[in-house]
Structure formats: structure tokens, C-alpha cells
Amino acid sequence: MKIMSINAGSSSLKFSLFDMDDEHVIVSGLFERIAIENSGYTIKYNGEKIHEDVELNNHQDAVRILIEKLISLGIIKSLDEIDGIGHRITAGGEKFKESVLVNDDVINDVIEIKDFAPLHNLHQANAIKAFREVLPNTPMVCVFDTTFHQTMDKEQYIYPTPMRWYRDYGVRKYGAHGTSHRFVSEEISNKLGKKDLRVIVCHIGSGGSVTAVKDGKCVDTSMGFTPLAGIMMGTRTGDIDPSILPYVMEKDGLNIGEAIDILNKQSGLIGMSEKSSDMRDIISGMNEGDEKCLLAFNKYCRSVTNYIAQYYVLLGGVDAICFTAGIGENSIPTRRKICENLACLGVKIDIDKNNVIGEYAKISTDDSSIGVYVVPTDEELMIARDTLFLTKNS
Ligand code: ADP
Image 1 (cartoon, protein in one colour):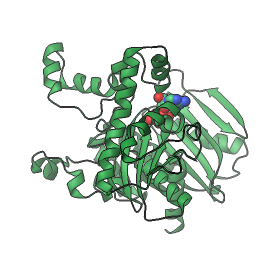
Image 2 (cartoon, helix red, strand yellow):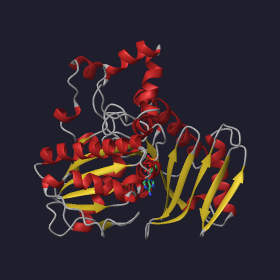
Image 3 (cartoon, protein in one colour):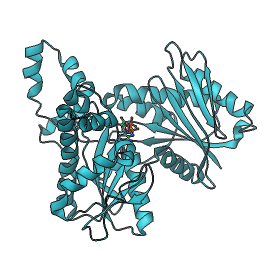
């Protein structure tokens, strides 16, 4: 069976077509700069990269060209060969506790939840509509970034703000990266051959979150009402004292939108280093003796360590710590530093085994109190698996 995973952004559309018999990617690609000048697409197929600059006025254009290319490249002979399409949706609010088959009501709900992810949900709903125009008979599924976190207890997801904010406005922790956290926690459970596991997943990329998982269910996660909360990130602060805002707004004459924008886009690694949001640049700066890069690196690792320590207590001990996403899968020094910070819990990293990039590995020593692993994430595959499951069982 062939299943397509779609990840639509405001000006982009990423896709992967899977052969679900062995879960391999048949073709993948990206449409970029939709509704912006110099738009185009890149398709990876048969070990080749095809790039073409082409006018993309909206997501409909991208979908039409994508389907035309799949046919002209001989990847599919007819549209019926696509058995299902899974769409990544950023916010599911409290409404969606699991992935669902798309119908008109679901699309309306996705649009209604837009307050929690103003840009993302609307564009993602538009992408669903664009696919439905071209493929009206193909079953489609919404896979939400938030549903994995819907198993949190109220004690974890509620904020100590007035209860009315939760009742009337839905102010609570929703989390993000749920599809990745679910994939990684399932993957480690399969690798270790155990279902009853206490796992801490560190999804650390340009955005990042840490999640505590018990027996396959999310117990707590570091992102909050929005993806601004939790650990320090490439350009985001993570948790800070909100009273900083009015203080700096008055000093710099900023309005609230401008101030929040700085917390989202000019803070974290780039804010502290005054150099880059990319961990590779931070590490090379640090190695060249740049004090700000060193401080940013140490602060970043400390903020991840703090969440691991918090979740160690919450879970009553931990069986596995998993690193994933851009930094987690690729940054040897970051993993090493975070693990060294955890030495008092008996965590011991094996320097040689940690010398791994982008592949599954156990990186702790045999006598480490907790197993530490690199587990590459695959959100697209997780979306395709859910889509297959729901289309088969519908
Ligand atoms: P996104 O949140 O955009 O999906 P990714 O998970 O792809 O982000 O992570 C991107 C980040 O991963 C980059 O900004 C960079 O900081 C980091 N990264 C990628 N490769 C390396 C590497 N070899 N060493 C250190 N950091 C890396």
C-alpha cells in the first residue's frame, strides 16, 4: 500500500510517499516559497534530486504539480494507487486525543483550534482542502503534534493561573513534537523488547522539547501552552520569568507583539551567543575560545539536564534516555555534556559509543545506571503508520 505524509507550512509543503509493505520512502520532496517570488520544488527519487523553479501561487498549485510529477515520473500510474494521505496538524487542542480520519467537521475543528497555532493550522487545513480537490476519494488522516501529550494528568497540564483562564479560554499545557516523542518512545520500546518502560525523550533540534513517557504514555512534556516554553532553543528562550516582559518593553518602547517576537526569534542560542542559532556554529565558536558561545552551550545543556532531572523524579527513576532531532542525533559534544551533567544519577556516557551521527546507538557504558540512546526520529513515517491504520480500519 502507498501512503503519503504531508507537512504543510505557511509557504512550504513537504511530502513523502511510503511503500508501507516495508515502510521505505519511494519519493519525497519539498515545495518552497509558495505565494512568494522564486518559488519551486525539489523531488528526491531513485537517488536523484530534481529541482525546478515554478510559479506556485498557493498550496493548490503545489498539490497539482506534485500529482502531475508522480504520474509523469512513472511513480504511480493512476491516482487510485495512493491509498491514503496523512496530514501533520500543529494544534489539536483538547478536542483531538488521537489521529482521526478527515471529514468536513474535522477540517472545521482544525480551523477553529487555530487560536493555539494561528498560522499553522489554517495553512494545514488549506493543504487538506487542496488535496481533497484533486483526490476526492482518497482517505485522509489528521495527525496532531499535540495528541500524544493528551494523556498528561491535570496536575501536569494545568498552570497555577486563575482557573477561569483554563475553563473559559483553554489556557493549559498542550506540548508539541508529540509525533516525534511517540515515534521515539515506541522505537526504544521495540528495540529493548519491553513495553513497561520509563523513558525520557529529548527531541532537541532548532526547536526542542523533553518528554517523560511511562509505559508508552506521555506523563509530562516541557513545551507548554505554546512552543515558547520549556528548554532553551535555537532562537527561543524556553521558560523565563514573565515579569521581564513589561520591564524590557518599557525600556525599549516595545509593544507586546514585538516583545514576544524577540523571545521567539532573537533569544536562545542566537540571543546569548550574538552569533548563530545553529548548534554547529556555537560549538565551533566555543572551540575557538568565544566566551559567549561557551556560556550559550553550557546554558543550553543545563536547561535540558534540568528537565531530565525533573522527569527522573516524576517517573520515579528512568530506564532509558533518548536523544533525537537535529542536535540530539548529530551533536556529539552536546550529548556528552548533558550526560556528564547527570553523573550524580549514575549516568555514564561511553565516549567511543557516543561517536555516532544520525543512527540508532546505545551511548552509555554497561555500568551506567540509565541506558542512554540515540534514536533517530521519523515523524513522516509515524504519520504514515497512523494513516495506514485508520484507513485500513475505517
Ligand atoms: P527543526 O526543529 O527545524 O526540525 P532539526 O531537528 O532539523 O530542526 O534540527 C536542526 C538543528 O540541528 C540545527 O539548527 C543545528 O543546530 C542542529 N544540528 C544539525 N546537525 C548538527 C551537528 N552535526 N552538530 C550540531 N548540531 C547540529
